[in-house]
Length: 294
Length: 294
Image (cartoon, rainbow over all chains, first blue to last red; front, side):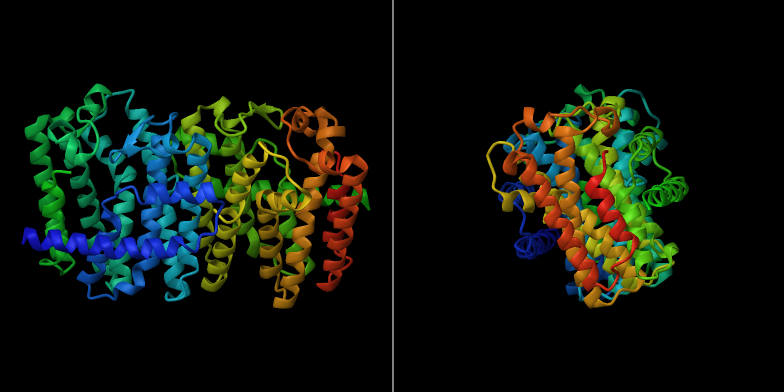
């Protein structure tokens, strides 16, 4: 099972990377800007959001060719958010996935513009996808812009910076992560289900599933920052503690964080059951994300 | 005529500002983020792009209620571009329109996020505008994302930074401005004409008109940086020269720049004639932008 899933992930990653390269060849941007965008897009991301979108689409028996533009769009937006988050005025990170961050490899101005360019192009990509109907494109753009915007991911980053200076409770921590990382994960799963042909009722359940999956992802991230192998996760461990950042382990203790994660896993699986896709690859991915070591 | 146009501009500005406030009330973002976005949105902009969109829509006999979301979207994107351009890593400007720039009033991280939020929300705004058909929304989003993205405005900003370190010729200067300021002006005029009911042939001519109008705007900007009144333009003059920036006057001399502007004015008016809207408010606006003192 685990071996099969690892194969599945690798196959999907490779498939996605091929499509990404093909699409980015159409972006006739100035050389340095283009290089900077491509650098971060190909810096070894796990392609989690595109893979979740594919898995969600397949779970409803959908045609994967329909999700190409949306899956690339969500990865472009994820990548832009990393570039801007790493900036000296934000998290001031020099290394990401074992490589120099965008502003270290290029310069700050280029990194700001590369992020702006990736974000903007993601909408052009969906809007110009002729394999989708007009109403499908509008639905996807509306959802993606909301998820990534000032009431979604950008709000989450803002709240996260604020929380660094104060102690927060569990519900605030959940809210920050639901915005900061959860919204894009939710979009990925929702878009896959929508283009896969899910009913409105199924979309509601899959939305709940996506909410819990986002939290599972984040708890595990926090746990890995304490117990992970720096070689495997591609960054130093213990940074949350040295930054006095509120995390699930800092709020609940390590045992409490693990129990909280198990609670989310159960709730996620219940939502899958409600959506009528209990034994799908999404269930396997839930267990995988809950126990991943990088 | 000039008095009537001044009244027209003021009336349109007020109308737009009311709609802008109403729309931004729907953005339930974290307080500081929201405050930062509103600060730059209401810092005294001329609303040139929305007004051009209105004028273009009216010239084709269109219904102004259709352009509300697009006119706000283009102003949101214009504002985001100013916030990011002013950042220390970019133009490093402390003052804009006589007020502290966004990162001076708030902080750099907030300014980056406010820009990201404005950019992203502009697409949500059009995608969720139920007064437009799905294909209208897709057309507008596609055009706007292309105009603002890595092959449009972002490319222009990148090329502009590169040009600061080298001397450029007239055609390169035209190309930079056609991207950096021209693309959004072009979108504004195109969107107004499209929603106003222009035919495809008229859209082609109006596109040419918008191209020249963008250049007229920029030549006059360069001229004002030499001969303008700092009180009226809200920033010090002579900054282009002290930054050794290539401008129309630096390349062609002041007389040459004025002649070049007249050439663009003639070409702009010819395009209006071709579009069949010779005596429209767009023609008055062309003369106004060509002779403005701020």
